[in-house]
Image (tube, rainbow, N blue to C red; front, side):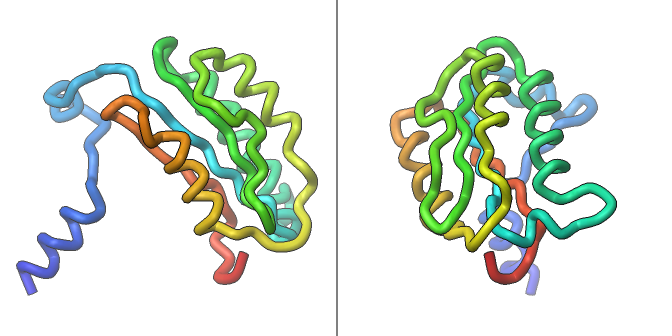
Length: 140
């Protein structure tokens, strides 16, 4: 069981972002692709729809992103919709792309959206991330 637990932790690729441990890793520039769920269920979470909460989280994330980091934005829908289809260090342009989010409707093809994100990161920096913002519904 210990081997399985170690394998699971290794596959999860955990990272530490607080305290002294975060200083051990490099603080180099990174590339990030934000994937926002555009399915209908994102409009049903009162008091604030999950789509608005995701957009706000992404906006806050982009405001705190260090200057050298690059970002792209994709909305997961029946077909992935690139809102900012290339990695850019212009965080203001990325924040403006969030205004292009279509209202929640239909379904979301997460494998295709994550695949599109990974395609953008194919020739990216070694420190790269895909951040998926969703309401966690079982079926997108």
